[in-house]
Length: 288
Length: 300
Image (cartoon, rainbow over all chains, first blue to last red; front, side, top):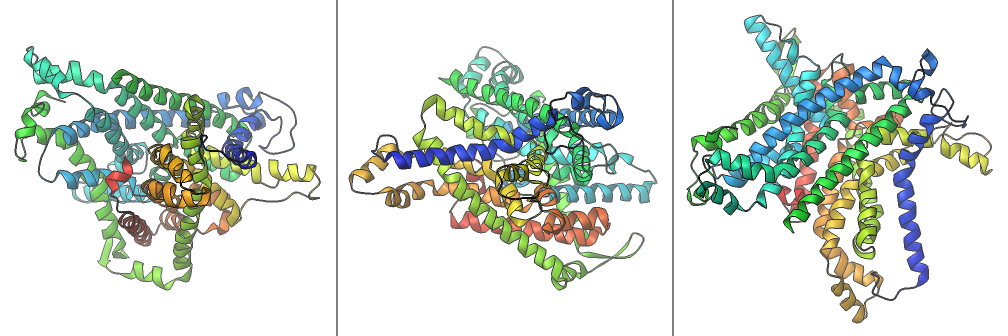
């Protein structure tokens, strides 16, 4: 049960074997994706034909590497653009929400808080279709009454950003609120006593205190946006972000270039996630 | 943020009675815009569209036809029930697989090693779901790693296709949701005092009785929130059923996608979407009531 209790060697070993198997289960899909990025074959499948770097740097059509595949590179660009917009918006609104829910009292607070949590229980596909319908209704309404064709509200990157922002904001609100809850209000009061205005006090005392949480929330937002599939699928127009491009290729059957791009995605998101964990840990050390 | 937005802060706000001040309202504006424009109105619109019938170009009438279609067409109805049953099954399997792992991380491992194991659990889930599913495809397809391996050790003569079965679908679904079970379980098991287990042991308890009477009752809040999150995610999953389950996977989100994108029938697609939302909320509500938790608790 726990190490301080006597137990048979057999059951301890059996337990350890189960845990090992579990981690093999966790790791296996990721490892094969990475390994097959180097397979010298036109398909990401057995047999193993030896090592090649063609799927990263190849220049000719059947062996087109990621770095020369303009379609993949372009979709990475779209994804990055969407993720930066979503992150900026979500961290800003999340910070406002954190101050609102932690510092202010107003009628209907609990109901609003419940609504703010709702995106967590809405499946991504449903969120996608509801935003698709709503933006389409507005665009049609404007077209009928004013005669303007609002291209921005038709499927495309703008409504993808809106769709992702809609659920990512809940996460940033929760992360930043949790940090603000630990803030010692007397620090801000001290600043006010020393002659700072409210805004100066928040800017010089409270916001720097919130910075680790804002960075952490920003990284989480960026990753969630970059890797989102369900909501994006419903809202995407002709400019496909990376996950949509990869999905289309996956359905058609693809060269190991897809493995190469996946491997890079894994390394970057793994590094960012570790950094986010590091930022969070730093936070708890500061508080002692 | 302007100075007006933070006008109410510090000591002042604890004494004020809940009335709406200008500063509070300005700070509330982004929240209201977000919730109204991106959450509430779109779902109201979804409901409206699901309750109408197309008469001609942009000409509609109120009708329950889309819901009637769902209940009279066995394919839709069966897919709905199948998705719900498979999601519940996936949730149970995730719990059974994840519980011993969480217990190992929280109670058996200590210090550095424990943190390392925990982070190893988390890292795979920062990788896109698409990449993980792609990995399973490489492992399980006819020309894949597993098929080659069992041919190599001489278990079978020809290649074997493991993809596109319900079992494969289940493996993928459990894999995708594992994190959301392990994290709440580890955090709830962390709060269980070792001395309680030792005391139970001293009083003559064995592994089974200690688990049943000490560990599981203590872990119940974590089990509940893990199960709720996993169930919701599985129900709303689109990628795993499409890629691992193949054409016959019959997942309800695929029906919604088909109505919307392939058949361009937004009215019945909306009705399906609303039904899925209703099923998901209903089961989450029942789960929260049974475990005596609130949504806000589940988030923490």
